[in-house]
Image (spheres, rainbow, N blue to C red):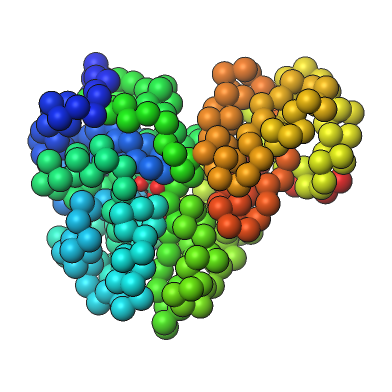
Length: 337
Ligand code: TXA
Ligand code: MG
């Protein structure tokens, strides 16, 4: 179906309009503190199937269910471990998704046939207002076309979804900029499936944290991964992205000796003045880099970049999330200098 995609604000009136789309089985582009999502009623199998179509998403990749109240964890999940409640107290609402045994009310299409469901309570005001006004939990993957960088502004969503969905709520730029931290529980431990703003270091105050090896290693073809999203090439602009690992001086030396048509650098802000080739810097701190990474990757497409040399971020705290997304954008291509 072709839509004339409406750009809504987060006014009460517009949220009501968006909530009616959700309760009527439609899809809304929804701002969250992490990235924009494509939201539909999580319990409506047909509505959720439309999300997969709009994104071109593989059927075996489950969606996160977004709730408007901490008490709703119990409504969609069972056998919730004690640690999950402690984490919820500290991090919900916020950028943390917990994978838990699902209740039957979650249809198979939402969980991609798994017997678990990823649940999170977003902290963005417009997202909470939409969920609460619609009276529905919403399934929402990132609002990009499958394989493209996640959208961190309403303009990014329009770029990918114009004509494919009825409406997008413009809630401004997403402050976190990378998708939520995804965790599962096993034998009293926390398994980190996807790094995000809630870091492994913070989680380790609650239980031992196992960092799933697919966070930093490519899955072999056909290999079973615990979080299906981890096996796809992802977050990718059209340009070839290469990560350059080394100190600032060596990075600058490398990029300045690799100029060419369509070649760009993605340095830290503090490197910018030394870059002799065109560049889009993406911040100095890990938090800034998280907030600006996807916008920078999208900008390279607009510029028609063919090759991007990205300076390798730090790998601790939120930096691990930045590194994980960049690794996938680069198809795991790293050059050490
Ligand atoms: O921040 C976010 O999480 C954003 C915003 C919109 O909330 N959403 C998001 O959704 O990033 P998506 O669909 O792009 O990524 C969800 C990730 C995928 O890697 C998926 O495989 C994993 O979470 N996931 C979801 N449910 C799961 C489950 N039951 N078991 C394992 N992994 C799961
Ligand atoms: Mg995604």
